[in-house]
Image (cartoon, rainbow, N blue to C red; front, side, top):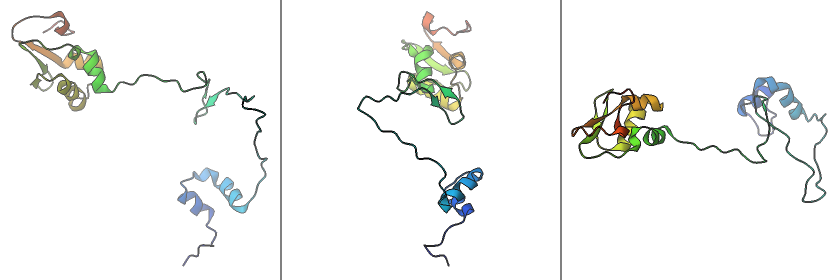
Length: 154
């Protein structure tokens, strides 16, 4: 039977808190109340601090320069969205045209459905691969430039 005032072992603390065993000495020192470090703090003289960000250190130790003091943002497009907007799927079908997947021969008129099909069913998130598998059946032989296969086929 364990009591609440029992001191847990170092191994128990490492396990409960999911701490890497290489920090066992540090955990033991903290549990024993050892404090050989100097406290770190600063006092601001005013709202305008003399402190400034010089670098951001990643967990792996890589040093990055700050991007103007904020987070650098980049637009993110999900694979289905990219396939929908950057392949021939970006063009509207005309009368007599239908999307067809050359991998499984499925044919549909719904552009979004075809983009999802190419990405989720066949894993075609690379634009060139998705556009290569995508075919446009043209029953009226309009042969529109925007719908031509990248390899010069149909």
